[in-house]
Image (cartoon, rainbow, N blue to C red; front, side):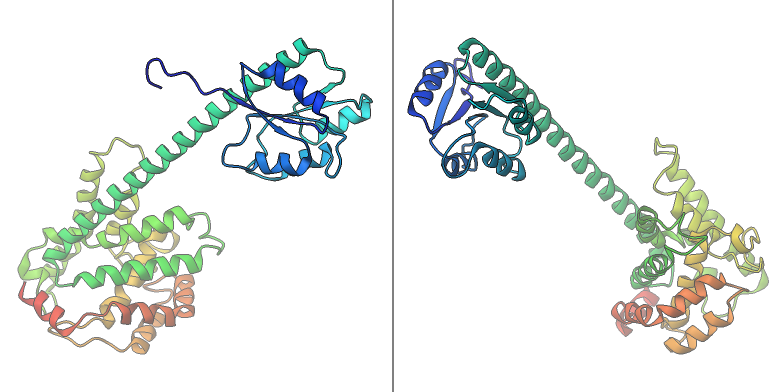
Length: 376
């Protein structure tokens, strides 16, 4: 409000079918408040629902057509007008009448003949309460919008961080960017399939599923530390080379731990990415690496990534190999149930195999992308 500008006066709607009562209330209120007048219930509802609604309503009960009780009921049933305070001004003086009015949502009940000082005091009180209510409501709305804005910003920072780190890994690996896209969609689809299953539902909540989707691209980030002659080798590794290759899980975990150390939070959004990078090469029977974990000791995130990563490696084309047909890849996944993979996850994977195949086809590598990656 600029200097010298007068505050907007609050508006009171007077609803009464008797001209004398309207004249009396108008004379009391003029100078302090803006007033609007309705001589019947229909008109009162129209004014209350207008672009310039009243701040308070003085409502008679006994009127032709729609009586005051029904007007009050309709106003309270409409979300747009429900918060307008209503004071009944009426000749109905029985306790039952007052009780009914208050039960319908009126804030006060004054019987006629009125006492002007009492009416003015109650009007002032309820308008003050309305002002406080509106102030708090506006501030709550502002705070909710700020929280939503900050949440969007945090999510954006998380997304950018994940993509940037994932892109770093992609520059060194012989996988294409679509491998990252495919595997994160596989994981999300499989997690959603298993979210209600006993033993998994405690972890596979919506928030974690979304984090799994964001984290999946970082599963091989540790490969940035593997020498090119090993990482890009198209033939089988020697035993010595394989031992070096296996360190990508530990290097990935350590890289993410270093990033987490810069985040001043006890539980960072990168914790699942770290878990996936470190454990996605573990096997259900304990023959995997780096720790030889088995069964449920392997984090769910790592178990999910294991299936997604192996399936995609099987179907993907590379310069040195053709992609395996979907059905053959499924058979290998099925054969790995209970040895390489969590049996429950294999069962769930088979149930959504058609949708997994759809993702594979949607984001499949072109011949040009495979050749370009090989030359990079």
